[in-house]
Image (cartoon, rainbow, N blue to C red; front, side, top):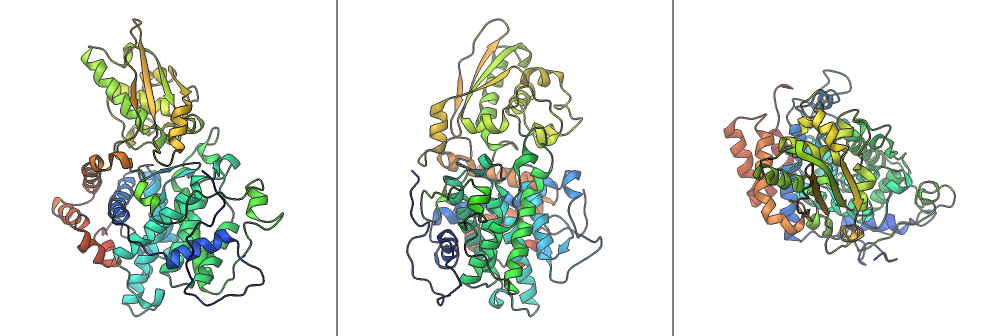
Length: 507
């Protein structure tokens, strides 16, 4: 599928000609052109982005229940409040936009429960909302007080939705044919690039300045994936996206203050990104930038779990029901074979690896499947040290009996643009020799093929996450606003963000 063509449809730029000492890499030109000149007119993308907005904020609010997350939030210097600063949902914090982007980005990503994009590279495009909301809120408050950020406009939620669609598209299209994890880089590099591009537009940078900002995002130091893998799996994976959002806003503001770009940051021999960090290989592109990614993005609806495991957990829930109907339980299981796709094996197959912490458990398909089979549930609290699941001898024994094997067709379907399924199939053998019928789940709830089925569940998830923070009347108001497209789109960003503000930290 990979082809060598521009990632943007030919369009005449509205900006005056710019004559740097050398031409920008085409990949940089395409991103800036798309951000500044592409008109979002896909109703499917806009409808999806509204659900992504509420789901993502809900995931951030849910993360406030975990002390490891809240310990990282707030101002750098305790007690600092920034006039007209970014507000952080569910908290009283009012911060500068750089730290605000970290706070919101870290909350969003903490529980691995927001949306997902799976291709040659995976990632969570709604991570970009950390930067988008922080900057849009700061702009709105500053301009309401007489400022002139972003040409003096007070952004609305429609502006946020369009920025989200474009950030999703940039991150997702760069991921379709290009694997950053195979060269040891973490996918948050794409959050940084996409966020830099769209917040540059929100801030009122010219198309040329957006090019410059995007080049700075590529030249900036890139995160290694080591914090996601044995033997170094740890909580940085939960705030890595917040770090990327923070860096994106910081870089865009530096360009706003006059810093130039690095035109051949990707292609420069010896010193460019391709030669230094991508083994000399240029990016491949499957399609031009449009609204494809938002239209096809995956919601995490049912389980707070790494996405490659979602269908395995759903299959396990079905197996649990079968065992119950037979008068049996997880204690009667001798072994399980999980027929799966290559990415699942590469990322979360940890059959015999010791579970050292939260980050290990929520990235181990065996642990997640075993928890569902034992307790008929999988919740974020099931990953915590000392919890019922984490200390269960049954789960520790059962996960070592779950073997993953690759099905090449599942892997092919995973990469097929017309399918993008994330299939898992469980075959359970009992202690008495009985082999249960294989349970296959190809597309998880939240996949494009099951989107209508997922929408009511997304709303239930949103309300559940709100319930820990707000009275029922407030929850009803937020749900009604979130489901009224016209009213939501026209709401100014600072007004919307104030709806989630709390007078004090309750966690």
